[in-house]
Image (cartoon, rainbow, N blue to C red; front, side, top):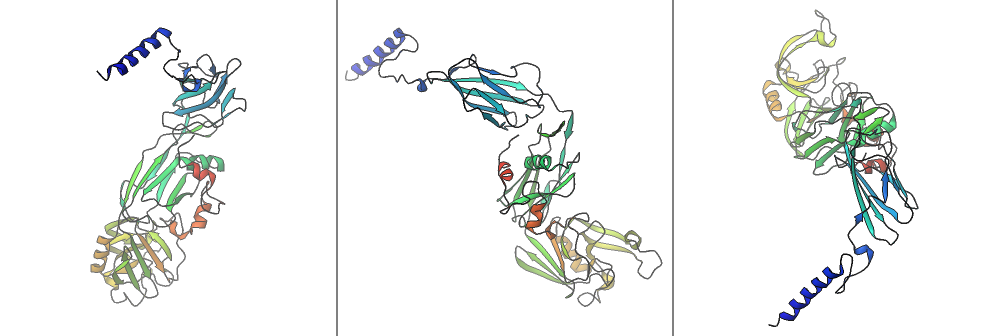
Amino acid sequence: MSHSPRLWTVVSCSLLVASLGAGATACGTDDNPLSARPFDASDQVAFNTKAGSRAVDPDRPLEVTLKGDGGRITDVTAVDAHGRRLAGELSATGDRWRSTTALAAGVRYTVTVGTEDARGAPGERTMTFETTPAKKLLTAEFGPDTGTYGVGQPVTAELSEPVKDKAARAVVERALVVESSPHTDGSWYWVDDKKLHFRPKEYWPAHATVSVRSNLEGVRITDHLYGAGATPLKLTIGDRVEVVTDAAAHQLTFKRNGEVVNTIPVTTGKPGFSTRNGYKVVLGKEYFVRMRSTTVGIAEGTSDSYDLPVYYATRVTWSGEYVHAAPWSVGSQGYDNVSHGCTGMSTDNAAWFYENIKQGDVVQVVNSLGDEMDPFGNGYGDWNLDWKKWREGSALLAGTQDGRSPADTARLRPQV
């Protein structure tokens, strides 16, 4: 019985509201217009394209205008099917909004417009439309293949079309996203007009996961050139393996996760064939290789010619530099440099090295009389550039002091 009055009050209030009709207030309801649900603003705003019409030219900006006097546009959100927001500007008077960046090609946009009428009541209108597909597409192919790699492995991107303009390069670079867990800072470097390399400031963290994706699909790069979709890539990073070969001491030191686990007597390139100094990233492993001097420009029948079966060969340059078994030079290993540029060791040591090294691990040569390893063109010499020089190869970071520019900050969120 004690609950009857409360029940009667609620029922009475409900009947009163129903009798007063929509929009009436009773029982303390707030009559502030901002508390109302948004009204349909279809009669309040207009677009320069129509919902359901044929696909529109992505080179044409999107415009939203206010119809009639009174009220204003408060907010416009235009998002494509990939979740990318279209940037735009609202006029000071709130009667016009216009996109400030190019629309993506071949995608569907959903546009939501918020308004206020003369009383301040909120309105809303949502509209969808599609843009015409691009006639000329730029594709990006990521490398290496999915798998487990060492801490020095760069990520590569091969483009289908050359991109020379700096502004266009910034558009491409901003859309090629590399993320690692745990996080590490890194950057792309434009090797040439069609090839980019990405590496972190320091080596990848051991046991990290690296994910690579493209947000280029539909994005305008230059006049009539738009980005295409790309197959994402995921890499797993193994132990931190670092190898240092001291050509003067004739010794190779193998470190795993910061600890020395093996030292191996070696021989490196003799005078005239001295091994290249610098950092090299392991390109692959071959159990057997037939090494012929003619492949490196040494004529047959000369004193330096050779044709040898080689086992347990770990490749570090495309031109033919390996770390491999060299049983014919065991007497010189640890004492003298007698090879034609490769790092030679006993068969047992080469077998151990072969089993413990992997693609992407870092091999550094010091104290050799040879030239410095080229950063590009003969394998992955990316680590021979310090971070300052590496940043100079980026269309986003070049010239910045702290390694982060406004454009780089923008790449943290996909945006056309």
